[in-house]
Amino acid sequence: MRYVYPCVLEQEKGGGFVVSFPDVPGANTCGDDRAEALDMAEDALAVALAGHVHERWDIPVPSPAAPGHVMVAVPPLVAAKLALYSAMREQRMTKTALADRLGLSESVVRRLLNPDHRSHISQIERALRVVGRRLAVEDRVA
Image (cartoon, rainbow, N blue to C red; front, top):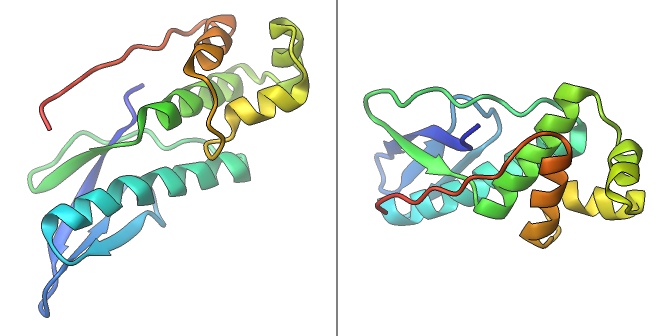
């Protein structure tokens, strides 16, 4: 899955912009100008999706872009962690089971799933392979 979500960017009467994500309730932010609001949007989205992981909720599937929406991607490391978390949920795999398959401790797997922890991408790639997934990177015009 691509972790790129549509956001609604609305200009306020008194100046500034408000950002919300229809697919991710609670992912809201604002900025003094459009560029700042979009920069803040990436962080707000990552924090809200991290909350889904911490609460053990499903990660929302992004809707296609609609007219007037701006697409915002989560940071690559967070996207990789969300992919691992989602694959484990789909397979009903526990952290302990993944740890056993990787030959790691359960605490290491907990850190691999924690969006706030700076894991090595190679460890997440290895874990994704164990759950039958592959990580793919895509670039796009900024």
